Image 1 (spheres, rainbow, N blue to C red):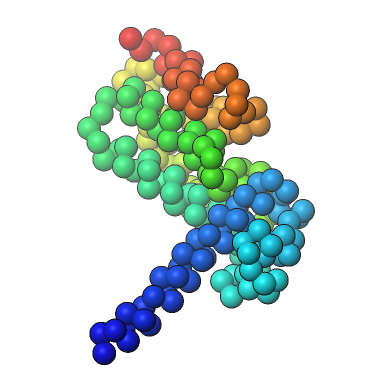
Image 2: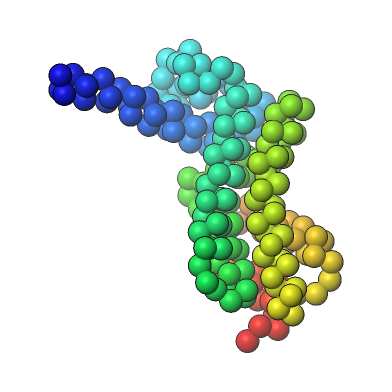
Length: 201
């Protein structure tokens, strides 16, 4: 009986892994070719599947796009919340959040957030509202960070504008960063913190 139960459980784990692999393929292709430029055939081929197999996991290409964005936001939020769980001075917390955010955009295999940044226009109105609702939670965490910096005297000006400037600068790195370039992700994170927190010793 136990052996049979194990045999039945294995396919479920396998399908879960297959879905995750398929999602990673979707993220990479949507980033490289754009949502409109990516076909189901492209996805199936890159994932090593038959042409109709992706629909076993997702009802449509639009659903794949939503899942990619939600995955990126969930992972970014999880990593950021882990930083807030630590007892850190505001400046050090900011440095770590900057590094985490850059990692979700620039590190190899992290295609989920870039898809969110540049393909949100491809969502249906209902799905756009769904993603924005999730994104609001991530933005709220960053707003909390900006509030801490301002209260500690490390950042001046309108707090909401400051958040938009910081995230805007970080997100724009996806346009100019090159893995083989002279700046590593760590170095970019250090320089970013230096720009926004230049008065911190």
